[in-house]
Image 1 (cartoon, rainbow, N blue to C red):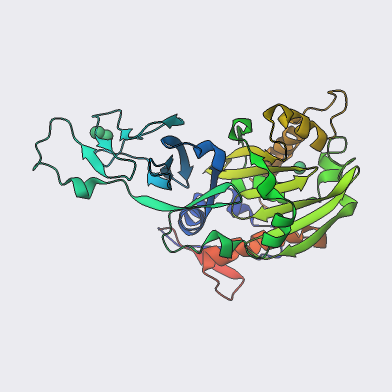
Image 2: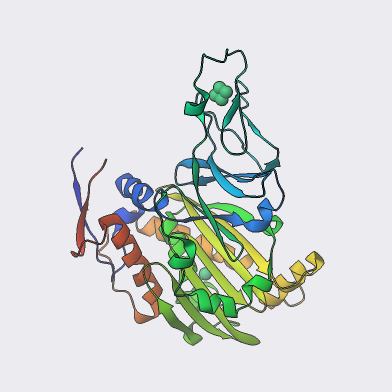
Length: 362
Ligand code: FES
Ligand SMILES: [Fe+2]
């Protein structure tokens, strides 16, 4: 396959190919999704020994598991026999049994039992489930297929003080509150939209703009790996928004922490999830807290409203960039988009000095 030249200037909008070319997605899978930390879920989803939560990291099915020993682990979620997906929904079990021929694994990933096989027929040690890196950061669970990835504390060191000041460790994550949706756009359209506050006045004139206006948003600190922005809130202290590439954005406001995570499905589709942590110890107050965050008056505005607005505009962006266009200039107010472009650039080119790169299909 021929190499394709891709012009890529991180200070401008991304080129159309970045949003639709399978070669780009293949490069992103290799250098980003299969190489960097990827957000998986919140820690409460794995509270008890035996809790198992299936997920995907790029193309790899991964099983998050709370071992009987209490340790958190991320195992390959495909059977070492013929590759069947092992666990397809959250469950609780001491071991992992394949639904196809019942090969059974311990929660360490060790192959324990093989029906109809004599002991000398299969080398069990050669058929274990690989373990991946897994770490938590303030109750957020991240997984990486890269054994050499830096620790999360190092990765997020720049924004750590800002996040700690917001009292995140006094908040309670609640995975039962998570939502999952599929958007008809490239994953980068959705995550860039979640990161920037420039569009609030136009896309969310009645849902977000009255409470968190575009004109009062500002940049705090940023880098290709983590950016913090803020903005005033009509009735409360300023919000803090953290953007953690590749696919995680969280916002602190009114005593809550709400997050949105994005994961690619294919070039034109992505999975968008939301969830949150709340100051209250009482789950009956969860909705109350959410209402407060959205300044929900008399039930007139549903929490989903602004997400529906985001989904609509993101899908419309995808319709546009399926044509040809010269990437436009990014504004100062979009510095977080520039930071993300630099992240992408660094990862896809391994920090090469040139702003133009060639990505070869592997
Ligand atoms: S594929 Fe899993 S036991 Fe056969
Ligand atoms: Fe939005």
